[in-house]
Image 1 (cartoon, rainbow, N blue to C red):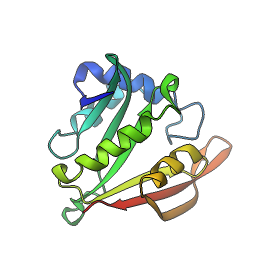
Image 2: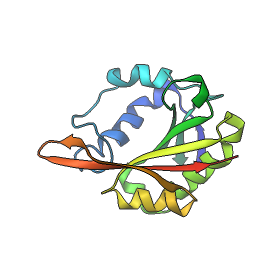
Image 3: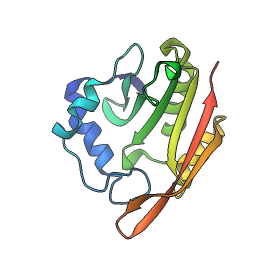
Image 4: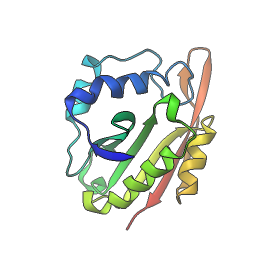
Length: 163
């Protein structure tokens, strides 16, 4: 597996992977599919030196992506980043998520990130287990905060100090 900075030509594949998680209502709080146009600003908010958007490839096929985003937008939180990892459904549960998260953790100091946060629906047990297997702990719980049609989802916040 190779991890590299995403380029604009990767955005359709990034969106395809993201949209594949929406119908399950366990991974993202989006309830309708998004388009490339919807995510252009999001794409350009990423900066390779501080808040990158990376794609993971296997045999020159994009199998997933990693996003670092600012937390809360105040200068005192510059060392804290929310991390998101999404994997193509054909490559899930094969160890790629662990490799991707390990890579992100190891590169965080170069990005001047000392704290990583994950925001995970508590129903997404696989993701919670992945993050906890790499030293993340539960730092917060927001019960029934997301309305997903007739259902609600509780959000677990996991965190890890890097430095």
